[in-house]
Image (cartoon, rainbow, N blue to C red; front, side, top):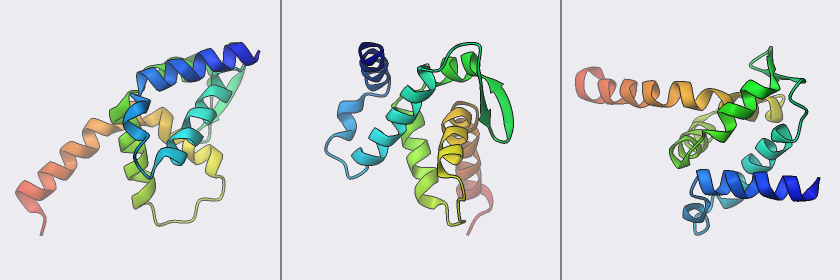
Length: 121
């Protein structure tokens, strides 16, 4: 079991270019995100995990987590640092943020560009 955890941890680190985070102050935050993803990857494929208030098949969540890259983790960290509201369940919040990052990152940055170029002051 520990060997499997180490394998997943190494795979995630490779996928997100972990070495790029080593000299940054967010390294501990990234380590926590990795451990959370490893925890989910260790769950049986026939189980479910709650994401955004809805139960999702863990196999779907695993697939999405294994596709995350450096850019997704950067986006998650950026979103976390900008959040000013109280988070009651940080684990659930992080899982949801990680899960949704692949679907929301590009739209978020496009909205920021549109705001800066065409309407924001």
